[in-house]
Structures are given as C-alpha cells and as structure tokens.
Amino acid sequence: MTDWTIKNFSPLISGKVRNVYAVPDREDLLFILTTDAISAFDRVVGEVPERGVILNRMSNYWKGAVGESIIKSDIFLTNPKQCLEMFGIKNLKKYNGRVMLVKRARALPIECIVRGYICGSLWKDYQSRQRVAGSYLDNHLPANLLESEELPMPIFTPTTKAPKGQHDEPLAFAEMSYVLKEWLRVQEIDLRQSNYFNARILAEKIRSVSLEIYCMASRLALEKGIIIADTKFEFGLVWNDNQNLWELRIIDEVLTPDSSRFWARDGYVMGKSQNSFDKQVLRDWLTNNPGEKLPDFLISSLYELYSSAYELICK
Image 1: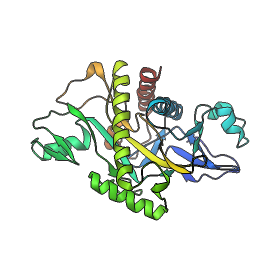
Image 2 (image 1 turned 135 degrees about the horizontal axis):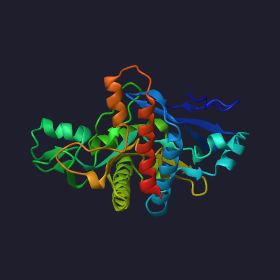
Image 3 (image 1 turned 90 degrees about the vertical axis):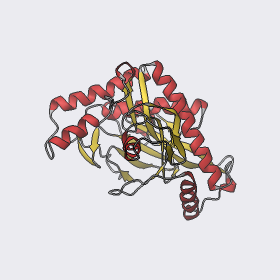
Image 4 (image 1 turned 30 degrees about the vertical axis):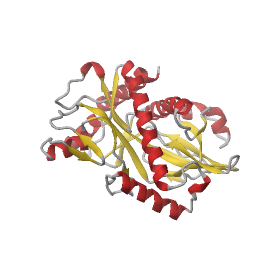
C-alpha cells in the first residue's frame, strides 16, 4: 500500500479513502487528500492506481456544475501547487489531482439518498411487500414495478449517518427533521442566523436541493450515455463571516461511482440487475475469495470501470 502520510502533519480524520488535515493558520479551511485505496464491506482491501485522481476530479466536476446553478459547494481551492505549498510539499507528481482545500463545515448527520430507479435495498423492500402499491419513506410506489425500472419520479429516501460498524437507518421526513433538530441543539447552532429558521425548513431545503441536483445530473449524464440509478449526497453548514449567518453547502464526494449507481444506457434492460460502473464486481470477487489479495486482472478491471465513467461524463 502506498504511504500517503504528510511529514510533520497528522490527519484530523484518516478515512478509508480520504485523509483530512487542518490547514496551518486557517481555521476556516480543511485540506483533503484522496488516495488510491479501495474499500468494500467497510474495510480497505487494496489499491487501484489513479482511482483517487478520478474520484477527486469527477467530484469536483459535479461540484462545479452544482455550484453554478443550485447550491454552493465546500470547495475553496483545487490548484494542487497552491494547496501543497501550504504544507511545504514539493512532490507535485505524487499528489497532483488528489488534493483540494475546502471550507470547514459542520457535517449534517444525514445521508441524503435520491433514487430514480428501483434497485438495491429499495427493490428488496418492494419485493418483500409483494410489489403492491404503497408508501416508502413518504414516497408512493405503484404496483408491479420491475427490477431496475425507472420510477414515475425521483424519490428522496434519507438515512441516518451511523457510526463505524453500525448500519444506517431509513428516515421518514418527520424523523429526519427531528434528527436535525437534536443535532442543531447539541451543536449549539441557532438557525435564526441562517436562511432556514428551523430544522423543518432546513430539512425541506435539503430534500428539494437533493432532488434538484439529481434531476440535473441525470439529464446531463443520460445525454452522455450514463443512467444515474441512484446517488447519495452529504451537506454541511458553513459559517459566513461576511454575512454573519450559516450557509448550507454540499460537501464530501458528489456523483462518483463510489456514491452512485451508474449504468450504461445502451445496455439497460429493465426486469433484471444491471452492469454498473461501481465496486459491485469487487464485492462479488471478495465474497467468493475472502481474505485473498486482489489479482492484477481485477485491479485493471476496476480501473477501467472508474476511468470509463470519468471519460464518459466529465469530458
């Protein structure tokens, strides 16, 4: 495994893929380094060369698109040379494309999931109810949908953000509002110093923005031959010193193969599971080969999946 440590600096957060550092003399900023590590089943299982670069660039591409039309992102600076200079790092080649500076945000305790097609856990739940019409987290689902079928309209299905080793729990909208209200109380954040005033209005804003981003991204991706079946967003509150208020920002990665299901439009056939530009091939291999080192052919296949998604969408 590649050593991604930065001399004389300890990360605030050592994630499976991303390491987060405080920025010298800038309490309002964070430095994020995206590595080539790849995880499955909540653990790092190996590396895919240049995967971190692809994830970082794809996420920045979407944050730029979103920030221009829907909601500001946490991005402050993506120029690698300027980012690295703040840490005295001169090895531009090793870190190029992997680093960025972001505004320090209070990350909301909600996973904001938007689904445009019925698959994954939603399909399993729907099957368990014999595919009858009904409600799922405040959303109406018609009867007799097929696996991977496009939903009548995209739906918002948030979950909790569970601690490591625990499972996220689905949230109805009223439950989401309550979770936000309690979190705001603990964080001592007064939403009267914002444009949202209370937890319910903030929850409504998060829901509407999540759906708007998904619809915009789905339209753009479909034109390039990619179906975005579902995706996950994260949001945070950033303090704006100039206006003396809290602002909602989209944070973390956005619309990457790690946070979304991407399907090829040309191979799409509803009524069955789809081939995805994501880690499912890795999960399948690990299930059949527990504890074994990733073979070269699988690493190459994963690189092709990630690079293909990037080339199709972002270029």
